[in-house]
Image (cartoon, rainbow, N blue to C red; front, side, top):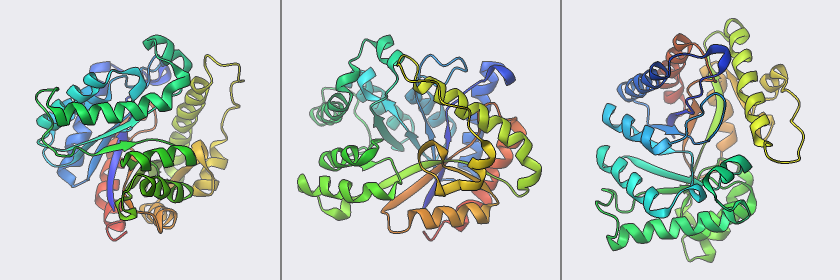
Length: 324
């Protein structure tokens, strides 16, 4: 199994630092991941967060492309309905060229009301629009109407669809599925079959909120603070612009205890490389899992901890997952 890291570039007010340093350090970690043999680095997208959540993942991927030589660069995800198909196709092609053919283009629907308002997009048609973006982007590359085109032919497209209906849609479009939820494999394969794809074409990969440490007890007081901020803040933004109440603060102790037994945003892996590797191996058993990417940093975490985390993922965790 391929192992990578994931960045959202959040700069929380309680630990806010110089923006240039924040981005520069993330690029240093991309270089370190490349040097240490990690397989991929992934970037996310959101808009209007008070902590400056990364708004343009393909721009960040272009910067990482210039600083790395081997590891693959992924977006998890570009919110496709917020962007025109030619824009995505052109930016993705440029990143693929700059990286010498190392881009994995992950697309998703997005879901936040304020983001759709900001971009003047139709939230009610987000799945239909995202499906259409996949078709349009492929056609733009195939027809040569976007120049220059990507180096990879085809450039891998992944859909970050969740739930059985979304998994089926990804299958029908013949894309990879950016999820490692075992419950989605059957509908994903059904969708592939409906469009005439071989079931063996199924490809899945995804992320876990994770912190790997050689000393779980010593690191926990710091980790729990950043874990709480990351998810309390994120869950507040999930319901912004709706009539849904703000979710209660998470219980970090419970998240630590439940680990992979939980689902959705309650899924948090914390422990030694051996503990985390065993949990991942058990969870993805039987899936056509090409890779997993783990959060490099929990929002605002000190640089020393992030650097140690990345090195531990590369040097100890990755070899433990090599035969999965």
